Length: 178
Image (cartoon, rainbow, N blue to C red; front, side):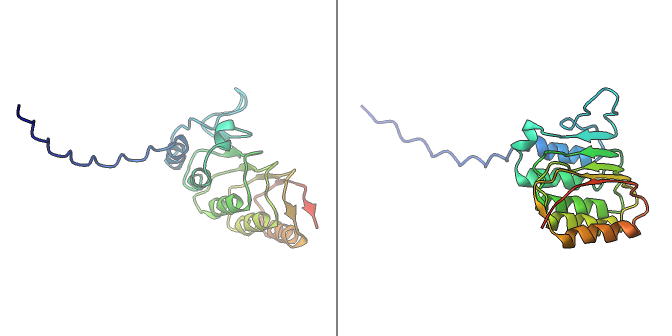
């Protein structure tokens, strides 16, 4: 009996592209001012076309830091979302800096931003304060119940920014100072 000749080796298959995560697709939708899928209004009285809420979202809690940053930075080019609530959403100083870059963007249209109950400390507050001078859309900023320590220098930076910022009419803040 004759042995069957060995079959030629299969060429290596091309690497499969990494699947685009739900959050990266959401960031693309936000940046393009398209209807979002993951940030939803809390009540039927809030307009889903202008309101984005992620407060305590279990899906957001498993997002990677890069995914969170991409979603936040996408708000810099969004022309429709006016109210953003990311309370209790694991926004730390690094992500607060991302928010600062969004707020400093000339195309930012956000009028109300809530970052309450997040682990933001002095460095994050200083970054946000520095962005306020170039922002003309923000009318309301919520920074209550932050879990990080805010030093006096950050409080003073925010107070000084408010002296020159005439568009922001509502600020809700309480800090754990040292």
